Image (cartoon, rainbow, N blue to C red; front, side):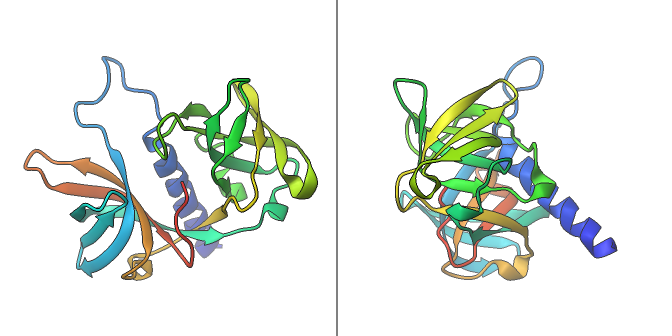
Length: 208
């Protein structure tokens, strides 16, 4: 029972991390030093320091905060997405208000409600992130669905070969050279970077 509780807590921490950069700004305006997402490949681990080659080719050294959360990104199947599933999708908005998915995240039940809503995202220029509950799945092999969230709903088209992933709690032992990673990073006054959350792909490239 204790182990299950720890797992749920870790997953919820992951969820809060995924939503962290999407949360409303505090009263008085945006934070002076907002976190950013760094995506890339882990090239080395030296204690709490991670060497990362970013997707733009920059070679970075990022220190993990003492309480940093590590979460695994695992492969899932589109057939696992059912009516009532809680999912997220980074997508490209269309002129008619619908979305074309670039990836699908199938959240564990413990993460239901995390980051719910539709907001801008930085996977590609103009992209969005939408987290919500699947209202209906239709089309060949579930290639279209209705995604409902507290402020509305979106029709989502899922092209062939769009990656589908899910999450599990992880540890620093999962941080292996060559792994795909995404980090929630804050730049410090001296120019150094600190990550409070790290997502690591287990046999997959992180698609979001």
